[in-house]
Amino acid sequence: MLNTLQKNFRIRPLAAAVASVISLTAGSMAYAQDDADEIVITGIKASLQAAMDIKRDSAGVVDAISAEDMGKFPDTNLAESLQRITGVSIDRSNGEGSRITVRGFGPEYNMVTLNGRTLPTGSAYGGSSGADASTRAGNSRAFDFANLASEAVSGVEVYKTGKANVAAGGIGASVNVKTSRPLDSSGFKGSIGGKAVSDTTNRTGDDITPEVSGLVSWSDDAGVFGVSLTASYQERDSGFTGATVNDWKVERWNGGSTPTIYDNPANSTIFKNAPAVGQLYSRPNDIRYTFSDRERDRTNAQLTFQYRPIENLTATLDYTFAQNNQSEHRGEVTTWIQNGSNLTNVEFDNSTIKTPKFVTEVYSSPKDIGFSQQYRAQEDTLESTGLNLDWAVNDQLTISVDAHHSTMESLPTGPGHSGELDIGVGATIKTGASWQFSGAEIPNWTNT
Image (cartoon, rainbow, N blue to C red):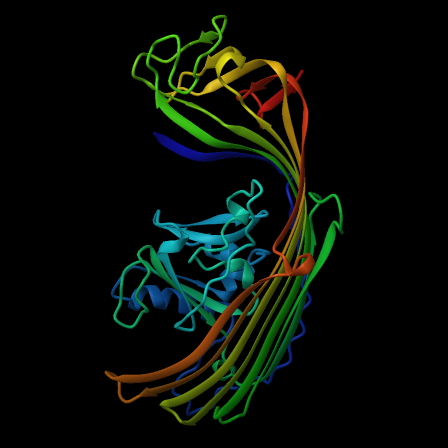
């Protein structure tokens, strides 16, 4: 027997991100001397040129996105920025990018590194009470990009083929997230930015929530020592309304009066547009109508020290912190689709695997309708400390030594340190029902 898990239907008003950015930059201007051998222009042109150079100089298939590319749109996190790369698509959780798919390979087949270091994984909170795919990823190996803001990232490299100097393990792709370095620019630089995110999908909380980010960087005039600090904070309140059709059973139509799944139908059952003998058909087990309100706040920070005693030797010490707190109040109404003598009418569609468009049932005794209220809460904390030594011996040889310690901790923060609190009741009030699975955004259910 073949089983397919579920079909999701969502009604979600457009959540608009309205960005108003205020930048305050203080820096010293460098004037080219008469005997200068090279002039490096920093800013938009240099950022775009760096991304093109990565693609041009690589022996394999690689794409890159620069900080300027990420700044063109008010992306809520790093996954939103990555979707702009050819061949990269994203999975969404609560309307935000969460995980990436590259060249058709799902999130669990991609390797993610931070400055060349392997990142531990952490996913959205799990749950059993009808939780859909966006809240059931607690045991996934896939990295959840919702934990990282895009403001502190200087660029991202997506390697679609293997390289000797790239961490192995990514069948779909190896993604390297690069953060800013103080010795990349001279002198003192600082910036602060703010955004206002408008989301009207929520029923509780605020429709407009803040996001702030800042950067402070300093290096001496000789380019020997530098230190930088980047930080960002974002809040968001949002909602979700939709329906999930679960546990589709697939069988072959036997052509008799007792189809395999629809066991012992009533003699008066009418099958319209029934499948041909031997043709595959399907039947759902239950439908869940969901209403939820979610709250999320995310904090990112990175502190970096760099020391370059000689021109071809650089030591980098950095600490990265990312914390994502999220909670959800969720309500569900569940109806189960019966079979057997309860059936009165089943109409199929014209697809290859025939699926009911319309089902009606009448019961000899009342059946249950499920009602439940759930509260879920989780805190994901990523910490990474690393030391890197990079020595360019000559034009043909570079020696790099890197050591780091990284952890990802996902802890439930619900009542009594629980991940999910679920209260449900069954009301025996359904004497008959009909479901319409086509012609509307979500399945229509009529109870009698």
